[in-house]
Image (tube, rainbow, N blue to C red; front, side, top):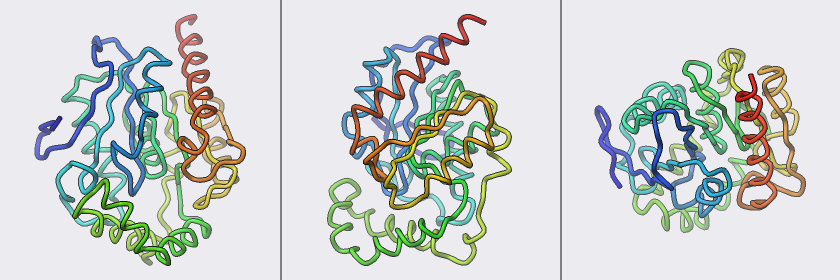
Amino acid sequence: MILELESSQLHVQLINWSPTPDSAVLVFLHDALGSVAQWRDFPSQLSEKTSLPAVVYDRHGHGQSPPFLQPRERDYLHREATQILPQLLKKLAIQHPILIGHSDGGTIALIYAAFHTAEAIITLAAHIDVESVTTAGIRQALNSAPVLLSKLRKYHGEKAGPLFAAWHRIWLSDSFADWSIEIETELINCPALIMQGERDEYATQRHAGRIVSIIGDRAELAIQQDCGHMLHLECGSAVLAKIVTFINSYRKTISSQ
């Protein structure tokens, strides 16, 4: 379905959708080249296993949503977290979001939780700054651009080329070299599960550990063995089980307080 926001539209998929004002809702935030379809059945499986409604959406320039509203600049992740995502949650009357974000989506979840109330956040391969392995991974992707673009067109159609260009241009630009959300991450005070694949092509395990250490006692680190950057697809069953355990654990703690 197409959701009308204050000044734009987004393609949205609702799963097991019968929330009440007090319901927690799973909100899925895809990666820099992702879309609703690229999550595959991961959102529906997690919704079933947690008995929680879920929403998955394509950001502008992705999937079935309209093209980019603005050029992708240094603050593009902040704009998504502090402008677009709050509009979507307000439109759907979601007051208790559990944000599940992959890569760029994980970063958006972190920024949102720094400035807004979230019931919890779960990040998969999120970034809080630019590591050398990140830029090396992007340059490697550039070397196989024709193959990658062919795959992306299946999900993004004619938007695939602009999307791919926007991704590598901003992350490899001089203006983005010192980008960081470490200060924002220090403001997060909700339960957080920080997950990363052991063989992530775009980040080190130390990076995920830093996120946890910055958030503090409310954060939990989970390194998934034998997985790369797409850990929720490469190791889906194990990742699902870990997230379900995390959600059940923190919700039980809240209900007992």
